[in-house]
Length: 420
Image (cartoon, rainbow, N blue to C red; front, side):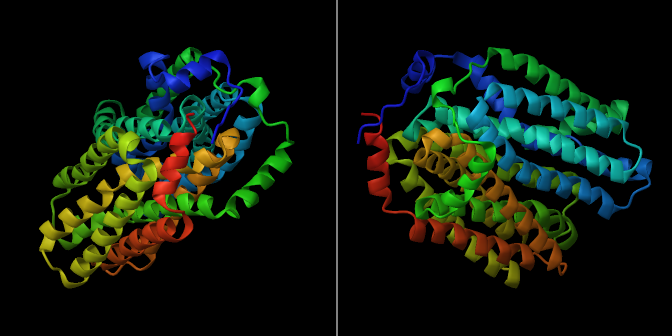
């Protein structure tokens, strides 16, 4: 199967020579993809202080997180077609400006309602960089190389959840919670300046000519394709489990198993290290083993560990140690599921990488919101709700891969043939 796309000379070289643009482009893409994490992780330690200053309760402050996630999920659907029609750099720049404005608004907010509104603006801007950074990777790299690059970028991204709360706590102690959002303003401005070093990866001749209204209709067509649903479902169900893990572990560790709050970060950080490790392994193996095959393995591991976790959460088998180990195994599957499902979906429509990236991203975060909401709705003071939500998520991820995607051997062969 021969595939010849009218890339510009620079982009064509980048597709075949991964180091053409060097570390600067890699650094900018890492920063853009990290906006999803830094926008929330930075200010988590400041939530109690913010609640006091704004005269808000815990529920209102929680809405600053869920509101951001909703804006981030829906906003991706807008930026994807815009990026396919007008190129990547200009929409990313506009998104960064919105992020800076939203962050400044948060820093100046004097009520919870205003804070939530500015968080929506912040999310609408941040998601532009994330969704279009993934599309840029697909512009520059094809097939398994795209999965390899996404895994490498996600390894860098995983540092944000580790360092974000630590740095946020230091800024809070030194200058107060408003300084955290002013720091995000600075991060946005620095990234906007660094954007100058990023080439435009979507040449004019490859841009969509369709009106945006019709481009949005493409989402319905994509959702009608079996393989697209398979990739989106594998990643979406897995995200539901990840967000159930994020929502459920504070109560499972601290309230139920009486872990001291100061040690919670260490247990949570262990999962992040697992994610980084499997992303690195995936980046090394994906060219040789194939992205679809590794995604199947990851989804299978997630399903197995999730089911055993549900049993352990119900019976208290293994106590805290068993819970931590099983959760570590589940979240570590991220490195095999997320990058490969994204790369596989975008490989189906390389000429619509922005729209595909947006749709898959929106599904992932939408499922994540549902996963965390289910844990909260069925909370009973035990790890059981988190356990069964993660189990269903893992099984759903594997079922999507098994039922909706053709043989991984055939798909990986198709991906390799796309180079010829």
